[in-house]
Amino acid sequence: ILNVEQSPQSLHVQEGDSTNFTCSFPSSNFYALHWYRWETAKSPEALFVMTLNGDEKKKGRISATLNTKEGYSYLYIKGSQPEDSATYLCAVTDSNYQLIWGAGTKLIIKP
Amino acid sequence: SQTIHQWPATLVQPVGSPLSLECTVEGTSNPNLYWYRQAAGRGLQLLFYSVGIGQISSEVPQNLSASRPQDRQFILSSKKLLLSDSGFYLCAWGDEAGYSTDTQYFGPGTRLTVL
Image (cartoon, rainbow over all chains, first blue to last red; front, side, top):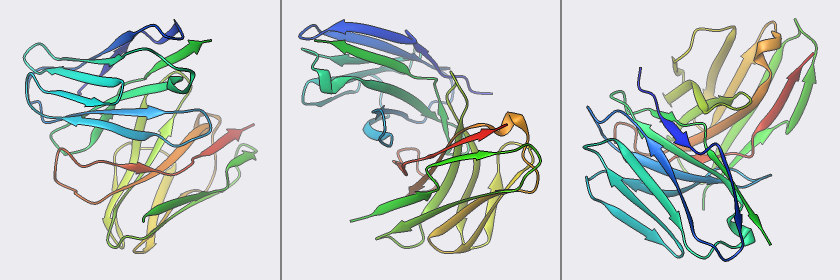
């Protein structure tokens, strides 16, 4: 059974600081990795989907990298703002094309 | 544009009672539909998915069932709820089944508490 691990479980960051967190997954039979942002009282929203080793995606102050050989992805947030507070979910596509989800990293930005 | 609706938003039910959660999608046709559950401190667990009317695939054996009576309607049901059914239920749709890059779009969710 494919297992997706996210760390840390939660993170408090001062406004203006940059931060990053990790998603780990089995490196064999990799298909795709997805990052979602889930704000309180809203629905999870897709940020990135990545498939190639070394891939890097960017959306504003948020970026993500992918290492399929060692089985991890980093999500970076530069210059954190209060609106970045959310739970960030990572999911990996399995051999049945279904998403296997990590438990998420809860990010809290302190003003 | 596409929208996805779920109701109710919250539900408190006694053990042994029935359950019916509804999800509808607008603005797209023949979507792939998904039911997920999130238990406290855990990742999203896929319960059911459907690629068409009347086609349901179950990922986890349990006392829940799903139905898709219409193209854009997905229903999650139970005849008798268990305490362990408590959690947050999310419905999602996607339009590229069979592609590893398929993005899923989520509804607002239902918070179910079984007492």
